[in-house]
Length: 222
Image (cartoon, rainbow, N blue to C red; front, side):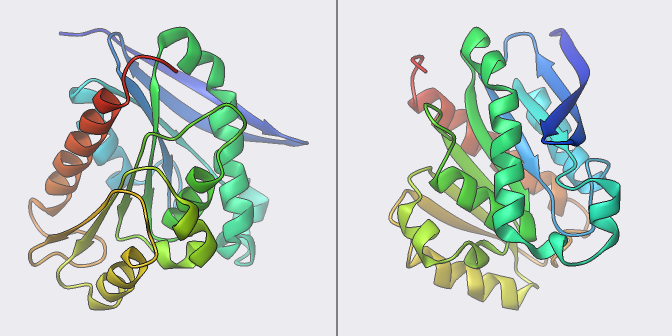
């Protein structure tokens, strides 16, 4: 079995230190940063389930809290897409040395409100960095705004449950603004939280294939 390193990290933003869990297979081809939805955290069972699937196919993962505990206690910052996008970019910069040293490609996996933040961050990544693939699960990608959707160049996979009609409609509408490679996958019978048997496993499998495909297509030069 391939050796996997698990490490606790801190993302420093001014006076704030956001905790994160970094999992990295020895021969990882890429690193996927997770952006969770409002009211969730790095301990999300759904996010950890998907992360475990990605780890099994040789991808590293970073699950971290987008907000400090006192910030998460209120509602205003949970829905501040610009703030959440900047936090995701700060986490991306934190792992920059690791991606350079290990020649890792970068991706974002996001859920719900975090999807809008991921689109924003990928559309305008930190200097000299590139996000090679994005996956959104039940994501409000529409909230990223028209400008970010048009500017986005990262291949983007949107996974939505068939029984989540509002988000499905919003995702379909957002694809019209996206000029990058994009795909909308619908999981039969699944609701917004993908709680149906096998639904979350399908999300993990689709995400793993998308990341592996586009990390490989991006080549070996960072």
